[in-house]
Image (tube, rainbow over all chains, first blue to last red):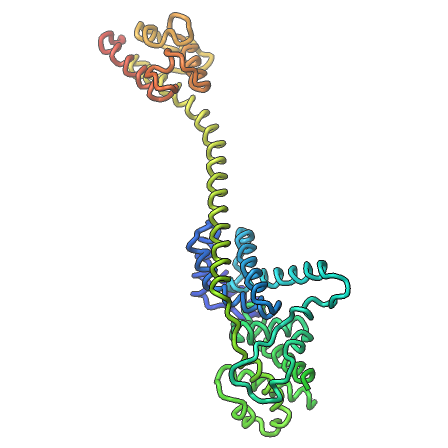
Length: 198
Length: 200
């Protein structure tokens, strides 16, 4: 059964077959511990995974360390990878999410008494203001704090779309949902942000 | 009802802005009846969309790449060693099994060919082992006893398996008992049978 067929059965967005075929070969070479394959996987996905980590933890240095950890974890786990019609990025994203969550749990355990209970409140999503600001009012919005209060699903979709830069169809493939469901999550997230920021 | 309607309108606006481009004013113009409610939401969208994307440092990228490359190399090395160990373990066992059998089979086949007896059998049927002065001369001393019997082949097989470097087995003196020694025996048998052919 092709990846597209599997995805159709599950009712989630499917990756283009050609891309999936290419990734099947890439993974096969990665399983054989090909340096070239791992170089390609790294170069194709590093920026996206870094942006995700950066959005979650805020600090560049920590984000870079966590991103490096994602690839090392991927190398350890590649033998158990099974193609299920999703792009390789979806698998790497799952690892990234786990790595970041583990980082938070570790930070939480290590935090000295009296510090904030929620590690994400300390690191959190940092606003990197700049560029063409739509208005003075929006400039004052505490987006970092607002995004932190979204539900997990809403936050992941917002991060993948607006912080990582994936298109909505790409987000749908990565999180394994319909495009329409992703748009709905974005919609509700923006409504929640709007409520929080006014 | 109104809230649900706004959600649907906002969803349509987000989809349009992403797929067709345009700005807030264009999106609002499509839903004039919801423009007032829609505007602050689309400003949130604009704020999110206009965020500059975080970029990793070159040093961070290079450091991560170096760590990954080293890890891949380590796994290649470990994988290679494991493969060699597996091959060595299973391979040497297989070679010992096949090799010793092949050596004896080679000797037996050579004996059969040169003595004209194509029915050489190994086992308890000692009476089937051919007899010929050449066999006694070339192979007869392998088991330390004069005369060629099945025990000579078994002695060579054991010498092969244990790598007994006694000159009786390591005929070419290369430090191992192997196929080359068998070929020497067969060559000597051939020469002997040429001068002393077996009966037709």
